[in-house]
Amino acid sequence: MVTSVPRLVIAAPSSGSGKTTVATGLMAAFAARGLAVSPHKVGPDYIDPGYHALATGRVGRNLDAYLCGPELVAPLFLHGARGCDLAVVEGVMGLYDGAAGEGELASTAHVAKLLGAPVVLVVDASSQSRSVAALVHGFASWDPQVRVGGVILNKVASDRHEELLREALDSSGVPVLGVLRRAPQVDTPSRHLGLVPVAERRSAAVEAVAAMAAQVAQGCDLDALEALARAAGALPGGSAPWTPASSARAEGRAPVVAVAGGSAFTFSYAEHTELLTAAGAEVVTFDPLRDEQLPDQTAGLVVGGGFPEVYAQELSANEPLRRAVAELALSGAPVAAECAGLLYLCRELDGQPMCGVLDATARMSDRLTLGYRDAVAVGDSVLAVAGTRMRGHEFHRTVVEPGAGAAPAWGVRAPVRRVEGFVQQGVHASYLHTHWASEPGVARRFVERCRTS
Image (cartoon, rainbow, N blue to C red):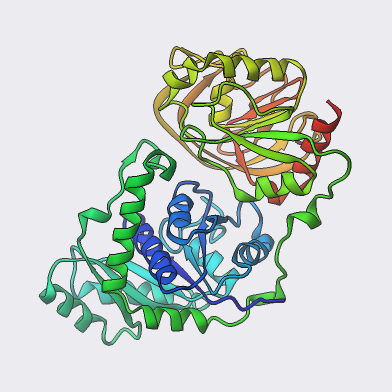
């Protein structure tokens, strides 16, 4: 059993420092050297892993100690890194920023410790010189269990600026492993929920990733970074890789589970499909923007997160598919919808007709709803029995009215106690994004209902 995957965690003092540029560029630069690179992202974010996948040719995977629990971080890492020469883990927010009110839980530092991985700190040096040494020293010494093995200086203005920064860091004990100049060509466009996903700008995203790789290859000491990764040693605790097959046994016929994809529905965790397949389903992806019918013999439907609000008119115009989804739900077949999927099942979204499965309307809002949630299943559904506890994440700028049906999906404890979502017939629809690896019985129950409905 391999438990000594060479690995690096790319972190920063704060958001906006350049983690995604450096991590993605580093993945692509290592891949260009002929290495099989395993890409990972700390936290619940779905968008960055899409860029990681472009850089490496492998599925981008999340490592979230809140959604999945600390005990699953190393096993999920090993599962994703199986067969790879090296792994790069992009952090979230600032190095020590975790779940609100939960200390270090789910922070980049927490995940780095769970993986026993060295940290490379990306510092936005655009408005400082000698002060960079104090900042790096503070981050490197804050937690003795976090090993900051090097620093990459980002947005450096000139050769003279670089000289001043290097001189300041000479006595810090933290080596400079890269210096990057300002480079607008590596910027990626953003909108109301962050970066625009790869699926919506494929050719431009390929060019951006290539530019990131070139910038990192030119400005960073790839040999030193690879050596740092290879010095990581075995993972703590003798963890074994997570496997979906051990979590969900396949029995009986293979029902077709249709999973929404395409530009409007880009948010999903790779482990969900793996769990559904291991539970015995035949998973078929379809695009609600293009396909006018569900896949043949669809017995169940999964509609995850994404940006239906951006494509409301196009989704509405695909009336044959909306009708097919409504008919499937009316038949009692299992339907699992999260966030974007919830909006798609409503009567309308921003005035545009949707599937009409739920007696609710959805609209865009100026307010960002963001954060981790502790949830408990209010009643039995196709995903869980009443009382099942799961952790979820909300991330949206929309409002659904009413926010819960006569049979809610979840009782939520944070930030305020409330009920949320809809359970009716075989439908489970909610704003909460959940990670099914934390509760593999979800996939097993869903597939079994697909067999019997």
